[in-house]
Length: 433
Image 1 (cartoon, helix red, strand yellow):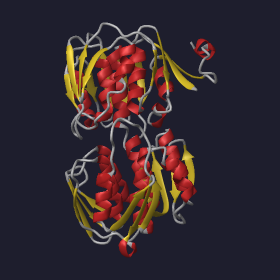
Image 2 (cartoon, one colour; image 1 turned 120 degrees about the vertical axis):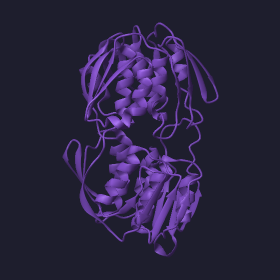
Image 3 (cartoon, helix red, strand yellow; image 1 turned 135 degrees about the horizontal axis):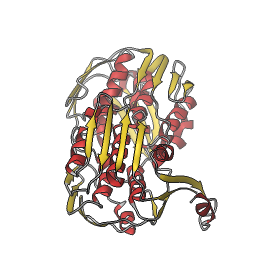
Image 4 (cartoon, rainbow, N blue to C red; image 1 turned 180 degrees about the horizontal axis):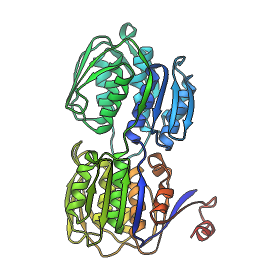
């Protein structure tokens, strides 16, 4: 049983390099299935989600070669459908992007319902609506998804998404890339990783316009060719380190970032009393004074990201006054609050709203990661707390953060990863601490 052990109370100082965007990588890797020829992808984050997706492609016949730790070549010239991927597709949410890429490449798809973090109902009805509109016959039963394009190829059409959905926008855009004719997708999400996916596909021969706006137009092509592409940096990883500095105090420069992508996060941290200095590809975060309360509502981009809600809510638990956080995207993203209460936080949750009364201190305690971003929030809480915090279920955290412990240690944090084969034994913790 792997755990993180954190001794809190230390400010963070130094520089941290931000990895490639997890949410871009988990869309681009499935999309590479449609590319005939060698596709080189740079700035791939070394996280468990990308490793599992690459393993799926390999099971389908793709040839994968790592050029270095963050650059790889994928050759999907001789891929095929395979039932061998099912055990993996059940484990991560992004596996549903294979529906769009399989339909584009083979005219049919076969996978399982996706896995991933559980923070409320996360239906794929808009994905299904989009595939059906493109001419796919869908069969969803007993945890499996089967789809087949009428006539062997999807056909372009006009699709209006009933709600702004990042996943559905990506999946439908992937599927439409190799559909015949023109597809117009309206009411789409505008997140940076959607633009990155469109840029990737265009660099391989697709014809996609409008990504980053609320209407995307896709002119289908017969074939995608090989090429090279470099992923954007991870907005949420950067925001997590920004929140960590806000909580602990100190000064950290984040390199390999796109400051514009961080505006929605920077604005709220500035309201809380944090200093932000922006450069062309870096952001310096500094906090020396006390934190001030603020109100936050999560919204689709360019609003405040739901994936930063747990991390910033944790920092607000230490801010002067009362803050109100409203979750505007997911139904049940406050499971981590019970863990923060173990550490002394005063938070009351009513539906999608959390009222946070700032406290002077948090105190180390045994806690667990409820999901990926909630796990990152627990790490931040541990860094800020007095005493030692142990964090279990870190498998969630390692789905989306490359070398989290190593990067934090370089900033001066007292954090280690330990393996405790006996959950009842504290010996491993004692040795690590």
